Length: 265
Image 1 (cartoon, rainbow, N blue to C red):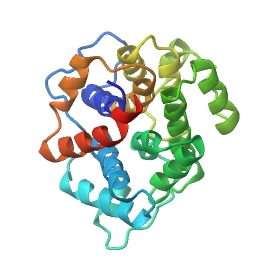
Image 2: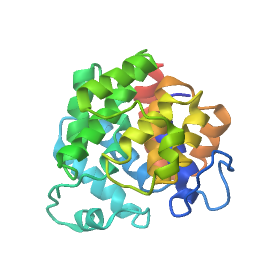
Image 3: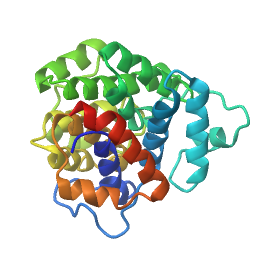
Image 4: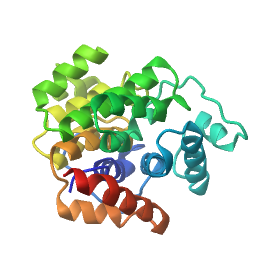
């Protein structure tokens, strides 16, 4: 299965490694304690926005606040917690990778790269209006859109490097040796894209991202969201990941999948 399941699965698989970083690809995919975190909740909040009214920033804000407050212990950053509680929430110039972790639904709704970029920017600017926060969302969304419309890895790599200036020519072995926890888009999105570019399949992508020893759940969600547009998520991983969603989140996922994913694969 392709689609936003890649972000969800990556998030769940990486959830136990966020605060216990590892530098190996040899680990159990769904150990005890695995859970859906803020990456999944916000991805599905964006998905629900796109189901309801993709042209309305107000509807986007309403969805982010509704789902965020429905799952208050999902692991949000401090400033986003304050944003969730605000009566009139305003963007707070964030450059963090929250904009990239939640963007994948935009690439599946769009009918052109230009529309994907428009939706990605909208999905980011209500919180992450710093140029790096927007760039993280745009580059991730572009990679997903290109992957799902048949682009090869070389084309995706060239487009991202030329359009956004990320250096994607580094290799994971070199990155892994020195990499540390980094929540910035600039310091985590390129590495997540490289995790996809060096991978052999979806599972290998997620293992690559987590093995860097960084923000494991978010980087696996970002990398996984690209990989699941390029390859199918194995059916056992797909089913296992959905088991972690409660009735509310699963209902959003199922509606989005039926409306936007299945018609496009």
